[in-house]
Image (cartoon, rainbow, N blue to C red):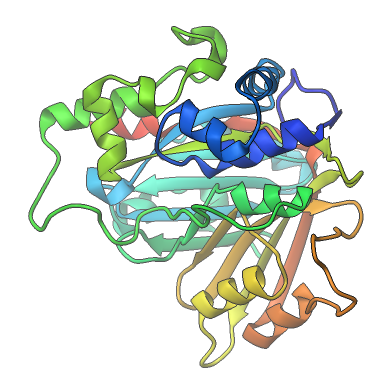
Length: 351
């Protein structure tokens, strides 16, 4: 999804292993990550540098919205008619509440953060407010565990390249607040968080080469934001059509929405997708009535380590046990444009 990334980039076994460690976004220094990788230091660092230099991965810092006064999220997959497509993209991109906007061939995916539900309804663009039947819209309270997985690619990547086990997946947005009762961020802490989420959005703007950056290099006040869980560190992929060591290619993003059946549990469904189907959405959210998830798709079935002849349960079958009125939208990666790229600095400029 980045203009400077080739349409199809082959990832070596070494680079795949380094990516699997980086996507964990675990606390600690680079030395800790090198030890976990099992690679020689020079091999690890060279592979990591290649990944950053090619623009295939980038660092982002994502705030825990309720800590800073944002309690509602709106997630949309919009399919406007062709004559309204670019105007809708512009409307969402210019909305100060938008932190993510992707545009594909026929769909626009967006995430907007608001202080409360009233503000969410007031600030949504008309195309979303109208609840066009071609638009999927979900409003969730971030004070609850409604977004248990948020732009976490660790599981999907390890699954794709055949590496067993996850370390931190899934990482949420909002949910239980990691702070003491009655504790609120001070002016200084808000300023530190604003600096952190507003760090250079391109390697050219960084004070060091991108592959040398990480939480352990941050000023102490900003490191404290990460340790407290008020801001989360993520490594995000540019997501070209990766070809992994197994020969499979990541070629599309798949959005799935469905209505929860009576007595179905969204948390149980998520757990079954991961544990039974070995499907790792990078985004999973629910408002208690509906479920919306986003996942990466490959061009052929994946082969897993220690896999037996026994078939894994089908994703479709597991989804149908918990959901009805299921809708699936697949978008080729090569057609996706990132219009607004994890712009959480917008939250701190609204006053």
